[in-house]
Length: 210
Image 1: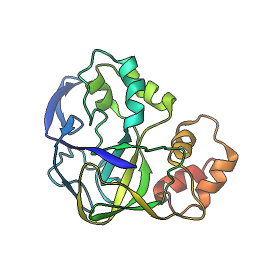
Image 2: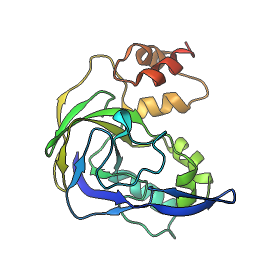
Image 3: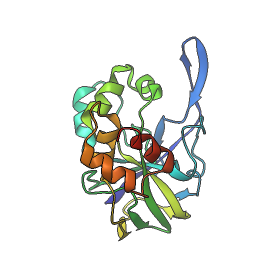
Image 4: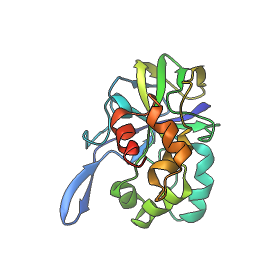
């Protein structure tokens, strides 16, 4: 995996149900290095820290290989890297091969794959339709959040080097499918219930389906 764009968002106001809110989902390429901290990306807007930022959601990454699918669905949008609110757009990011708990060295930072992405209404606001939420879930490739084990700068053209992988874990794609499936796969549920790579609250929630 290689960084092809570093993206930062500024506070952007919008109307939702008659009230003004703000969001950091409108990210744009920075053309420079960004600093990954333990709780967020420095200088990046996080309007709702209840659901974004923090240890398990410090940095969001998304695959460049998924862009053509969405450009075909929404050709009239103004497309650029960062369209899905990701801090890092990655080339070669295969969610069927990258696993929860994987530890990577990239630039100055040491990061760990930590959490799936839960699409919310703000993605719908950006795309101009809440229908995109259902499409995003059905497509099955939601990117992933990273925990930052060692803070540092990262920049374009730097590669992710795998340093460690848990013995019992799920791929990013498998976890995304498992969380959103109406009928949970018993095999995946069993793995998830035993995997320390999955955040405790999400693991406990999945255990209720066993």
